[in-house]
Length: 468
Image (tube, rainbow, N blue to C red):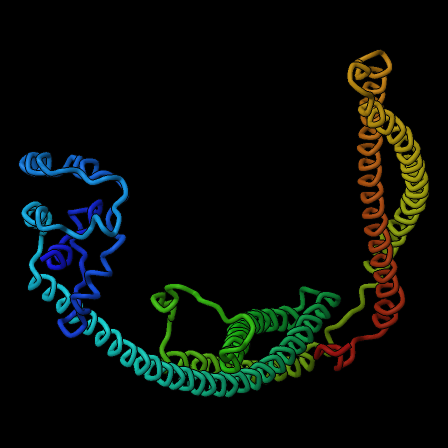
């Protein structure tokens, strides 16, 4: 009875509200003899009345426990063995201290075992499913990446094809544009040649009218050619950029540099075309370019015919205007001499400005030494101990000196910037004058040497058709 009592009691001093008991099945229970011995030395080392003074015990429990004899602070082995005279008290205490029956204890153990088994089963199934999921997703991801790589490769090939087509057509268009530009210049020169002869002659006026009309057509056709060329160049530039991007994407792999997460990028649809409209766009550009080239070639042929016809018509209508050229040559020579005078003065001023800049730089460099000394003195004086850190006259004068020298340097630097700006302006004026002087010299050479030499005789057929 004593062993049964002790086996069903909760240890004194433990929390009586605890519900986390984990009983084991019957075949795991130890023998009663071992259980009795296992509860030895498990009594609390304080008075029973102290353990029963917890505030959450019922009041009837206090009354029942208050009539029981108290145990000493330490229970010996002999005191734990209940004598026959103490059995009634032990029985009453057992009734008071037990909370669960052995069936509850077994059921609790079985419940815990079943929950543990279920948890292990669920965990094992989760591990197997997770491993299978990882393998499946890995294979799916690799296949998706391989498909994307293949698609990018095909896209790169498509872009390369259309890029070659655009490049070929662009070269043809550039050649046609250059040819039309040349014939346009010839037409302009031929039209200009008609200004020298007598302008009241009906034949010359008629030729001028036709030349101007075809010149307007040539200008409009050149604009159309350049627009088509611009579209081809823009399309080619886009193709080259797309080729670089898709080629880079095509060669990206899992260990490439620059691979990173871009959250939400798959939700952004910035596309503006589909493969059909993409191919049609380039095809339309090429067709437009071919159409403009055909129109340009026809216009060139018409201009060629016009130049031949007008040259034949104006063969006897040309007259040289040497007086106008003589006056123009004199005006150009005078302007050239004035430009040379201004250029010489500008060069002299540039020299003086450069010397001024050097003197300012030297002054700034000299003042920097004064600033360093003053700041070094101030820095050294900050190391004075304790009360010696006095804001004396020397300190104030040093601070004032730093400000003065720094202000002087700032003023000199501003003056240096002004001088450099002035120098830049002078250099710009010098370049303008030199360019204008070269233009005037070239104009003199053209008017005096070339044009006057050619206008001494009547223009030949080659000149009238636009050749120099």
